[in-house]
Amino acid sequence: MSIQEHILDIYASISDKTGEMLEAAKSRDWDRLVALEQDCRVLIDCLKDTDAGPVPGVKFVQRKVALIRKALADDAEIRKFTEPWMNQLEAYLGSARREGRLQRAYETDHGG
Image: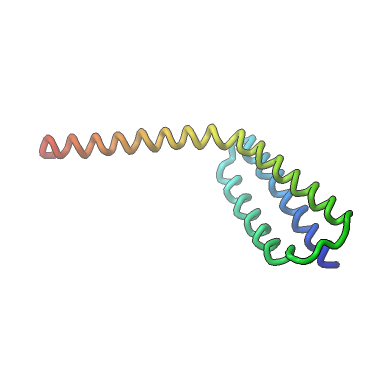
């Protein structure tokens, strides 16, 4: 396998992984989404070490661009599912912090 084929295989793996991430987000399987995101980061780190040489040809670049665009489109779709969930989580955590501060204030004021 040539280095170009290896690089494209990594991009294809990232594309597959972002597709799996999108499915996890659609099904609200947040634990799976996080695990898949970690897998994707490993692949991206591998690319950083591998895909630094000169551009080998038009077909290579076209395939690479197509895979990157697919991964970015998946990422945009994933955000549609994760952002509302993250907003709910932030609201919940903010409420819990406020309740904790009120509880501590009440205990302080009343010798609790």
